[in-house]
Amino acid sequence: MLWPYHAALMATAFTLSATGAAVSTFMRKKPWWFKTHRRLEIAGAAFLVLGYAMAAYMIWRMGADPERPHQMIGGAAVLVVLATAAAGWASLKVRRYGARLRTAHRWAGRLSLVLMLTAALTGMMDAGLI
Image (cartoon, rainbow, N blue to C red; front, top):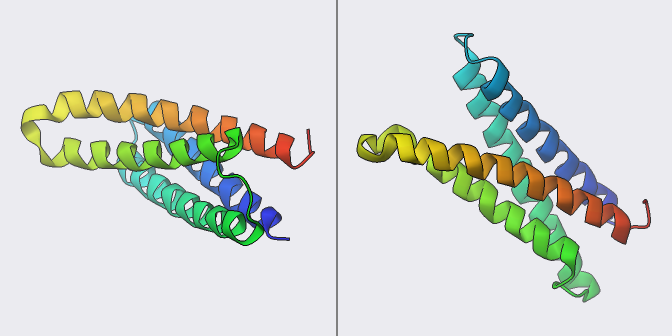
């Protein structure tokens, strides 16, 4: 039974990502906010990818249906998190479109948190926890 490990990885990913978002929202006046935000989000994305890899293994091993709402929302969350990271990185490197990329980064970050939370809720429903 691997789903508790998957759940722990994803809960850690969400916690790190939500904390990183809170740092960028509420701690901007602190000199350390950006490094802390970046480190928390990189760690959150790493845990998310590990949790997703475990989910893919579980689906493959059990022969489960990969088109259930939890799996589809979780896959979308992973894609949006990676797009968020790419937009954040690009906003620092591509000065010409920096403002637009920062806006895209912020909105993608918000969407990724909503998708992660929705995936968590549907996963708990699938597991019979709620």
